[in-house]
Amino acid sequence: MILKFLNILINSPKYWLVCLFGGIAALLVALLYQYAFDEWPCVLCIHIRLWITLLVVVSIAGLLLRKFKILNLFSHFSLVLVAVGLTERSYMLLGTERGFVFGDCGFDVGLPAWFAIESWLPWIYRVESSCGYTPELVFGITMAEALMVISVGLLILSVAVSIVGFIEMKSHYKT
Image (cartoon, rainbow, N blue to C red; front, side):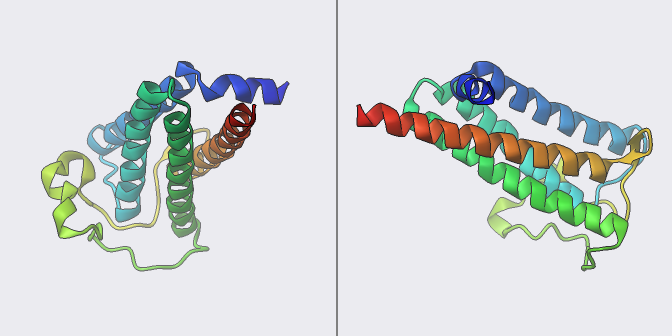
């Protein structure tokens, strides 16, 4: 049953649309908290925004390339890499909030000079605060906790879909 569901997701536009609109929704929630509730982003928050932006880009590519087997599989593997990066940054954010990760969290995004996105789009990618806590969303769940659960869920799903897609493509080319 699960295998059949994953097989459907491999070529489904709905899968990519959920990823696309989920990423857009996450960015909008971040901007809502930033501008409506004065919860300014730290460097880890900006890193997470960058990974979510890449999620949106990969989702658009996956949606457009899903009819081409190899490019579709490449899109799925790219989504796995995005999910890994998002999970790692979410873990660091949660660890900083909870105190089990200690590190220097300054105001430098750490990107190369040729990719000065914080200068190009400061309203979304400029560091405005130091790390330490994230706002509560609902029922006592913080943004860092929600990001951790969502990113791990995305990672598990994207790995499973990629594996099934690889197996399907491998069996397709064997016959």
